[in-house]
Length: 287
Image 1 (cartoon, rainbow, N blue to C red):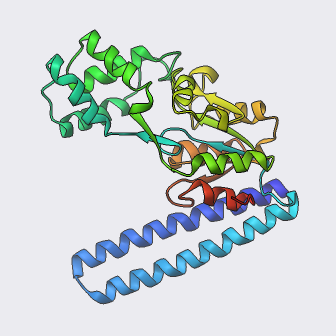
Image 2 (spheres, rainbow, N blue to C red):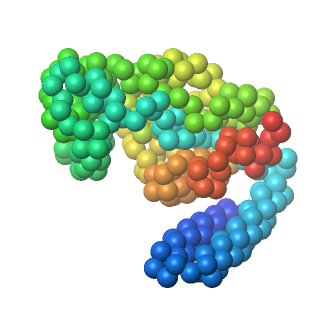
């Protein structure tokens, strides 16, 4: 019963969020076509109404969770890695070009980015998994397709670079303080990421491995988001039921839909939540 209501509320949250996005897009289109101030005002008013509705539903949902679980809305927090916890310190295409110039790469950053996206979106071989073990075959294909360069030394230099702390930065500068507060409050925390086996050494290099009680990485679990298996594995590692966990990630398909299919709650990073302090406050943890 409670689980069913939780799912209905999560669906309502998602529908309102989608509605707000559609309203914003429609308002922008009208403004560009008609160039009328009234259209902009109407769009702004609609966005305010949508935000108020979303805020009201969120408060209702938080109150509902606390009526079930007490002080904290969730017993566990699952966090996506790339795009939520951390991002490349410099644009990927820029790194591919800068390192590749000495190996004969001549494509512009824009060309590399276009080719990268095209290659990344294509099905990978006969497997549904891109990241198997260290994922070298997959990344060799991506680098070669993006840059037109198949030089093995170039690939190894790139591959090693993205295992260093210089290659990445945290999305939220207050992350360490917030995660420590969350753990001290007794809420368990895990990383859930589509990544290869470099993730653990990367977390160590960034000195944030101790922020998490568990790491569920697709190369080890042999399941990639949005497959519910990886979320269920994270919950298993933390010793919690899926309905007791909330996942935060930046990808609607992989993070929101995948987590909800596994029975977890889910919040979209960059939209529903924009900082880990906000995540903590929603759960009920004071930072």
